[in-house]
Image (cartoon, rainbow, N blue to C red):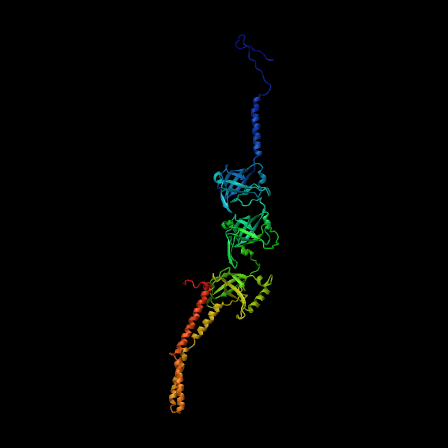
Length: 528
């Protein structure tokens, strides 16, 4: 109940103010309270739905910008770069990025990150969209594996996704050729994979090439499969004509690798990371490769023009090895130059598989004792290429293999042309050493002595004198025939000179045929 108070002015007829006291707070205070609750809820929701923070290391920050550079997977934004700083050791840059909510399941140790930018590899052009929109970080998430928040970014985008089915294989060769990262891998002229890396081993002279073959074609790689360099094209000339072999136009332009299994192969499917040799071409891959090789050295003292490293070594026309080195050496003991040629022989081609070393040497010694020798022969009359031929020469001089030398030395025999030239030269030298002038002088002295004897025997009977006169006439005629100024002597000298010139011309012809075998067909170079 309220109490009425008199008006302070005392004026009559004016009602006094009534003050009422409330018992609860005003509703106006609910507004800031609700705002605080909403703000807390939003903050909690924002914090609880915030994705994980990750750290990515790159060699350079090219194209990266804090607060702007996005992380994308299949063109969907899944993260944002927050900061970009230098690494403590200045070896690169460190990016702090925030992923979207739920991305923690994708962040395993197999997940890959890289900076997307324009790139040409393997005949493909990627990243052209970044020319207008700017660079971003690409991501290849992998659910399997140990979870992590620290990653090392790749220099380039991976050619093969971690989720793509297939297997990796390792190839080794002495030369990389035209094969590079991104080059295709062919199976029977169908592209089934790509080259993912190619590098020179730091502790050897091998070039290691890693390839990926997609499923289900990876089942085609057998334990005895053979890989070869399919870059460009191979051209060969044989009795069947000209043959050109190539995999595709792509392999001609950017290179490539092809593989196949030998005919009738029953090998098992090769396991991942199996190491295979990489052959130079299809022909080398088809040639049977033997596991054993022995090195011999053969010496020649004649011209070896046309003999190169890789030239075949044949036994009666069958290849059994190849030339591995050709050098020039001065032999101080003989005071002359010799040409040691190193050859690699595959004994399994001749003696069979798994022959013990002692038995193999004994067999070689028996063959050498029977006349087995090495000899230079012309392999192609048009190109002048030489080869090393092994054959049995029954009339060869006795020789043997020097097994205790650093490299076993195998005996050789001269070529037929060289032997003919040598025999003719020796014949001319012997004829040139005949004392023709001395023989004529001695015969003239004998005739003078006989003439004196005849003069002293003038008192002999006329018949004897007549006989002596006839004998004198005969001797005079003989002197006229073989004397220093006689026609016979001149003809003999001329015959010797002509024989010497013929031997010299034959020697020059032999050298011409050895250096330019095609001169038998086309004639001497420069002739009209």
